[in-house]
Length: 168
Image (tube, rainbow, N blue to C red; front, side, top):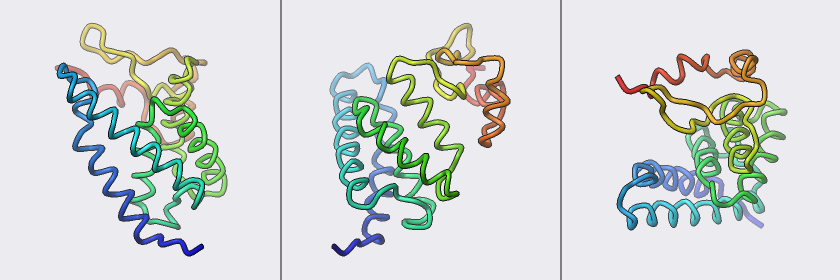
């Protein structure tokens, strides 16, 4: 089977661009907008599942930095497709162990998958809501070690991270 990685890279980046365009609709008050977002992420999750079967994890070496990041974003937003998220997490862990995937992005996908499974996250990357103007993370396994664990994978301390989202 001939793998057209140039076409794959182009497809992944186009999917990520659509994702970014419609992500504002994820929490829209308009049911039709929310439905369009869910439909888009489901289609993308399905396609990423096919890509992983055919190509494995789309690494930077295979598809370039932009398309590799796009694959991660698609997996990150496949919230209603835990099978896709779990498979992406597994393949991305293998790639990261070989130095072929971002440990930072892997940490975000790790947390996202755990939260979607109803489990505690590790790195505090997933925000549950806002209380008194400050973002609050979903529960963490070891909150006292969160910043240490974040530093190990290249994520800024939690307070710096959430300052970006704080309502002034």
